Length: 180
Image (cartoon, rainbow, N blue to C red; front, side, top):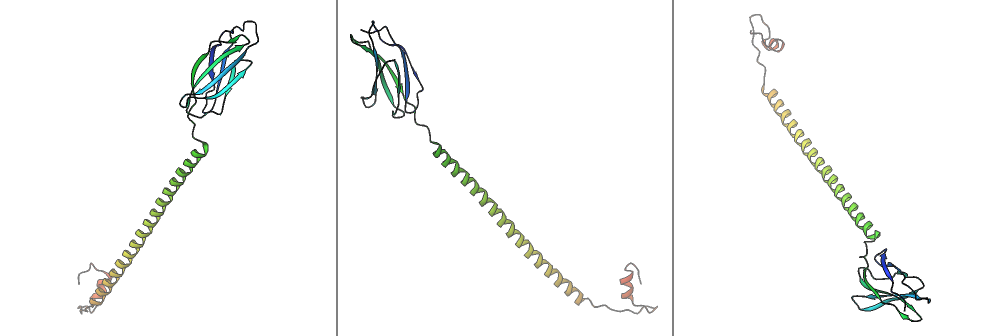
């Protein structure tokens, strides 16, 4: 009967595969082969049954985020060695790049949309304020012109005769500080 395998290690655990390597025990002078069986823990069924000349196995096409019981042993013409049991888990499937790109695209589009809407609201606000200011100034300008015209119309120059015979109004216009 062959000696059992020992120093089994698990490498490269991914979302769908793993790699098992063991050291062979004494073969008893006979040719031996190695067997690995992978049992799906939740469903309690055999997933894979492999035979190899060396105690090195690669298991693939497994479901992600699953638990498995792995059994490794040696066989020869005289019988089967003691079985080595260990538990292996596959990783959860990572997000795909397409999914990440889709989210990034949505985020970029929403950011650009927010910026465009903000700029549009700002431009419209500035336009409205400009129109209101222009209308206010025009109205104020018309009111001031009307008041000036009313003031000019109401103001009639009175002419006084000065002893010198000069027009006082004309003098006031030339020298307003002069007292007649």
